[in-house]
Image (tube, rainbow over all chains, first blue to last red; front, side):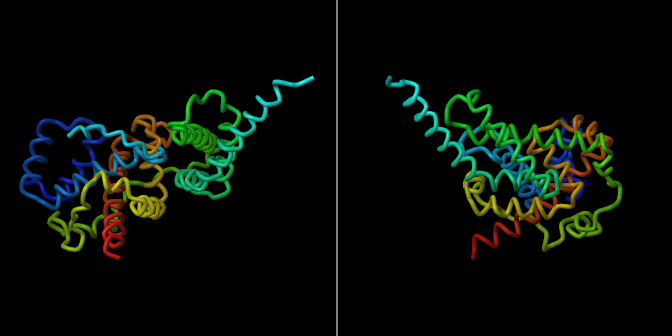
Length: 67
Length: 204
């Protein structure tokens, strides 16, 4: 069974490359049971979004976060 | 003889001074950004100075007011990358030591790989409200500065400069896998740091 630390590795990795099917399944399974990791996953996504906006003049350009 | 070019000249001079004012108002943001990448105040100041000069010179190529900051940041990004490439050629870009374990990260988890109670991620509230908040950006900048140098460099190249991991590997001469490890650490550190600053600020 995958633990939180490993789950965070996949949460980060998915922003760099496509996860394999097995990685996706284990991550999804873990997230379905772990509220703390669900928060972490949201925060990683928010970090990506925040960085994309860094320096822009606060235009509100809502794009899907792809999830 | 009445010179029509004179009033045109006044108008341009006016526009120019408005833009100059605006540039000087975003200057601190630009310097903070450059410092994050170059980790050297003097070099960051130089990069910003050059970017500002280029922005003024190339002013005619910018059409319209919206997205002006983004445009200036774009110029600054090129300047920063130039400096980093130059540093690399000079052998001054430090090679990354990345294989060691990271205690700050290890302390967030128990031995069995679960979150330590005090490190468990909590909700930050509505994401849109978060990124619109001035306080969030203050915390964000402080947390970026608090990252270890190498970690910050890789993270900001990836996320703020928008380089691909492949390009980062070439620039810093690291393997892609190392890059992923560093990015994972950066996100875990930032997450923890931002959460602390963000939630504390909300209640105070």
